[in-house]
Figure (cartoon, rainbow, N blue to C red):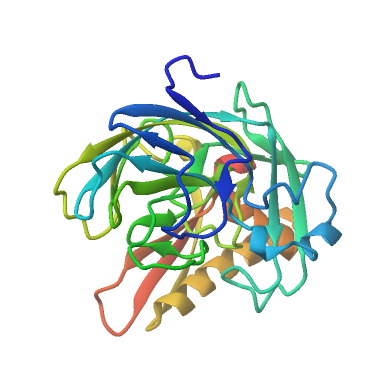
Length: 314
């Protein structure tokens, strides 16, 4: 229980998709601190005893539930919510899956795969992967946003101008996020909590993990933001930097193709040097490897790099 919180939004108080007609679960004044009990992105369909067979039977109408919505008094179109991310209380359980038809290399990995994670929710020591891997943890909420101005139900899968499924690893404790408001009250929701993720979330999932999070919701009048922005409290890769990185690249005129080539190169590298099955390497790098645009102006080619932290195996 959060001693400084005015409200608790329980794990059953969630919804699927963005729809500005959903009735708010709470109405709050700006400056209110709220604790959210978030379920994982499968809405509990994948558990500690799940097997790869369960990946193939996922109900996609129940993917990425978000807690809320929260009606913020005084919030109007043109304003912005200021979300101060106070803390996360992880559960100690998580999963990573290759879901057929999803992910950057979906055509190369057509079969389901599943990794179940256990980690210490108090110490947040790196989570074990196989016999040698240790993935550093950095809890955050993958989906966080306001309702869209357009009426009707909108998919929760893509990120949007009011936030949503942004999967930004650096929206962790201490970060301040600003979200555009398009409807009266903003109708803020949050979910899809992760214990760790690499930038790009290349296989489509991270360490998907239910957890509680505490956030303070404030209001900035007439901010007129076109898209989300945020401020971090300090360095963002310190949990990964200690041993340096192995880096592969993709080069060519198409940014997506170059990204795929960089990721494929890292899968090949880890398979050759660590003896990992390709699907295991694919899931592993999704939890801790970073896809970066290194160069985009020297026509006709761009260059994308994929950084894998050496601390995972050293």
